[in-house]
Image (cartoon, rainbow, N blue to C red; front, top):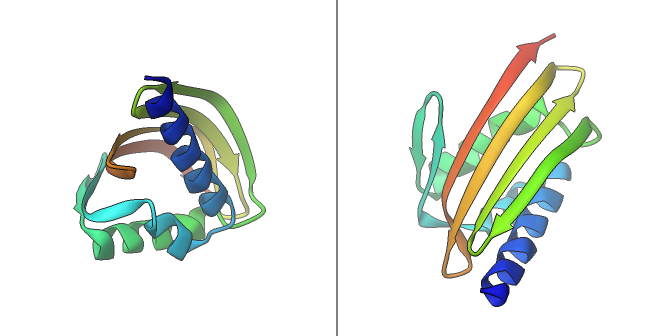
Length: 118
């Protein structure tokens, strides 16, 4: 189990670093064509759709935005984070993501955020 958690932490760290740098190519390295992101607006499946999702998100949270990690938990191949962010575009007092990994990639990712446009 420790090795699963170790790999999960490594992939999560890669994902968060890539997200903070708005590095779309690095983010996409964590997903496969079978990956799916579940959002309040619906399901996003496949690399092209996930790439578009993150490109849009980077407009809301550009590199250099304030970001606060409020909680980070890893259990086996699952990671859960709670966060907040503030940019010139939007204030996000609460965001949450859950990552379910399979074979070293993010297989299922849930994301929800309370986004207040400025």
